[in-house]
Length: 223
Image (tube, rainbow, N blue to C red; front, side, top):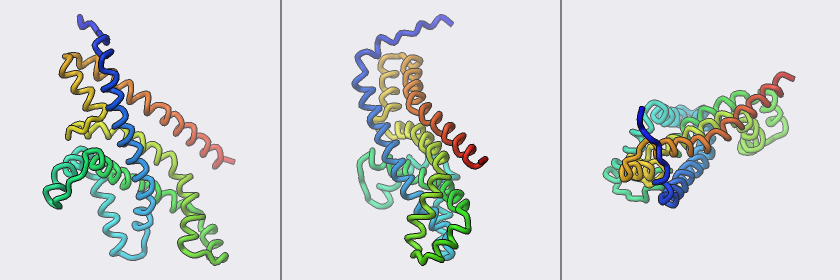
């Protein structure tokens, strides 16, 4: 291999890369907020005793879990405006596609957490006369969130990585900016290697924290 790596051409592109990184972080952070909040609500719908409530929620989850994220992004960007005559900003559309995808996966994580709540705690809620919303907010949610937190954070890392897919619809995120720089400078190896290192630097600390959290939870259960 005689290829000579040269990163000097990137010195004039740091500002553009930073702008792309800000878009990536915005997509990831807002999508995570959407996924964490809506995921719990969707989880409650799947646990409903009423079939006409439970069935659409389960269908929503299966659709987003069983279709490629890239297809979902393309569908939202091109099909939603055509079908519903709705035109919104590209970043908002990206958040919508990524957030709903994450909502489906987080709902499953929450469901496992809700089902792990001891029956005795629910019986105590009834004995204390707590209303259903009080039982959900003060008893079920905290315990489900604590149990599901490692999975929620892992899903958050995944959506950070999947946010790079919006480059296919010309959203100026980190991946899209990197692709443009690589095309203009004819230096794909250096550019994509740098992009990969940036994603690694963003994801690795969260992944390490998830591992620490899982070990802590395992130690607590072993006592």
